[in-house]
Image (cartoon, rainbow, N blue to C red):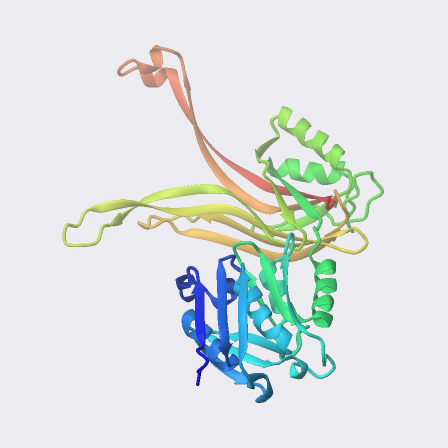
Length: 410
C-alpha cells in the first residue's frame, strides 16, 4: 500500500524584517515571497507560514474550509498579496492585531457587506496630514468609515494609507480622501516694526483722519482711534490703503521721525500658526557649578515676538489670532537681568491685504553724546574746556503693522 507523502516548501525572503518593523509596514513592503505546499490541510499550511513570520495564528471560522487536503504554489511581491492569494478564494479574510494574525470568514465580516470580498488598497496622501486622516478613517468597529473587520495603517515614510476592507467601504474612504486631500490656500504675513516718537504717533492719527470715536471717511480708513495711551497698553487700528501707509512710513524715515527696525515676512498655510521674533540676547555672569568655582557667561532673551494664526473665512476675509509678547529689561542691579514682559492675546477679522496696526508699546532710550574741538579736547588739564557731554532721554513708541495676503492654492 502506497502512502501519500506531503511535501512542504516554503521560501520567505528576508523574513527577519517583519519582526523588526511594524506589522502594518511589513504588509506593504515589497519583498520576494514564495509559498509552495502540496496535499496539506489549510490549518497546517497557515500555521507553518505564521511560524516562519513570527506571528501568533488565530482562527474564527467554521470547520468546512479546513476539510480536505490542499495544494498551493504562490509567488507574491508583498505579504498582503500572499495572504490574499491564499485566503480570498476560500472566502476567508485576515486581520493583523499587533503580532497576531486573525483569520475569519469574509461573509461574516460585517452585516450589510455580506459576500463583498475583502480587498487591500494603497492610497498616497499628497497634501493633508496623513496621520489625521488615519484617525478620521478610524479602525473597524470604532465608529469610523471602516467595517468591523476592516483596518487601516499608515506608512509614514511614504505617507501612504493602507486600507483593508470590503470594496464598498474602500470606495467610501476613497471619496472621503478625494474631498479632504486637496491643497489649501496660504497666507503671506508681512510685519513692519517701526520705532517712532510719541509726537509722530499722534501726528499719524491726525493725518490718517482719526476721529474721537474712531470713525473716518479717509482713504486709509482706520476703524479704531489711535489716541495716546499709558505705557504698557496696546492700541490698534486698521489701515485699508497699504500703498498710502508705505508712502507715509517712507516719508517719516526720510525726515528722521521714525525708524524701520525690522520687516519680517513669513508664509504659512491657512489655519497654521507662524512666529515672528525680534530682540536681543543679554549676557550676564553666572556662577559655575562644581568644586572649581568660577563664572560662566549665560544669556537671557528680551524679544518682541508675534505668533499669528490666520484663518481664511468663506467670504475671503482673514481672521487673525494674535499672541504678542514684548520684553524689556527692568532697572536694578541684580546679577541676573530682570525682564519685564507684556503679553496680549486677541482676534481680529480683517479684509485681505488690509493692515492691522498695533501700538502702545513704549521704550525708554538713554543716550550720551560727546562733542568737542579736535585735538584740543584731548589736551591734558585744559581738554575739558573744549568738549562737552550731553545726556538725553528719548521716549519712543513701537508701532507694529501686520498685513496678511491670501495666496490662492494652485
